[in-house]
Image (cartoon, rainbow, N blue to C red; front, side, top):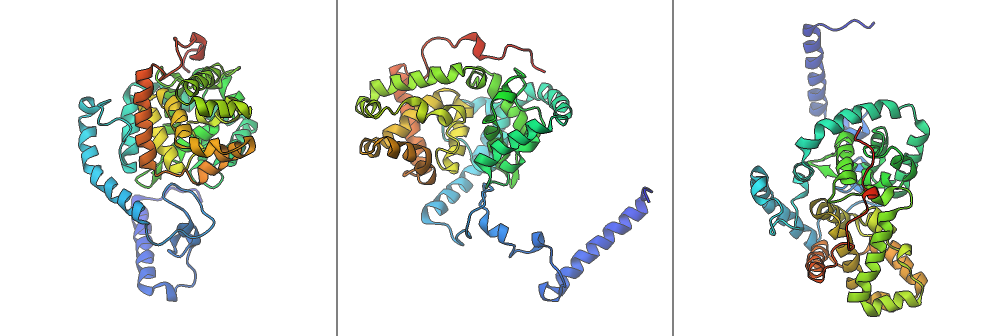
Length: 375
């Protein structure tokens, strides 16, 4: 026991394993005494799990709907175009034609690498990752809390369940070691990145940790300010959201005020987690893509877009109905196809830019950025 196999023995074992696999195919399923569930095409889990990793209560349809088939065909056509663009990324980066369209799901990982300037940040992040990974193994209580938070938001997602891996990365202690201990909701953001499937694989824990590191610390996103004590950036964006509604949707703003539907009641997940659990997951991924590309203006513009698209419905509702509509019903059925929602978002970003309302006025306070050195 414990003896290492020689090269000849390893080759012999591999040949035996291959022969056993071929023999099972030759016998067929009728002549096999036992089939492992994961080897069986009839395994029920395969038929209730969609391409994003979500497990549904019933089997998925055997055929695409007309709209789903159209989206699939469009994505296949775009693959080669995007591969060429990524080969000459400096030429196309932040071009107006790239904009909020973003690329096919199968190229998402490559795009994220470019947008996050991976080559510049990867060395430092992975160095810290290895340290946090070791240290946080000594903190089972924190891991359990983070995993519980993930289960509340992504309990039906196979990729989301892997958020524990990112918890072992030390959470988002890249800028301030107190952030991860106070904001269990940030685990859902990591679950989204961990659940982002590329060519059939989700992002690794290291990639998700590195992506969160950039989102927390760079000036385009600066998510750190949303999660520090007192939530100063959240309050700034909520006040600006009220300002946008008062200027561009005054009738809806008066209706919300009449029912004391304060911004704090419905915008937490909009700003904290970029609409995670507030719109369908397919649209959430598109919004996260846009947020990675364009940064903070996406949060302001999508908040305005969502209310503008559904203003007629909201104007007919009372407070309880509006809360249920914004917090639950829109996640189940947004009422618009993803492409239509993204086109409306793009128009809203241009409108807010012309009005000078893309982001809250003035420079953000310096304390919204990390105060401690990386690592």
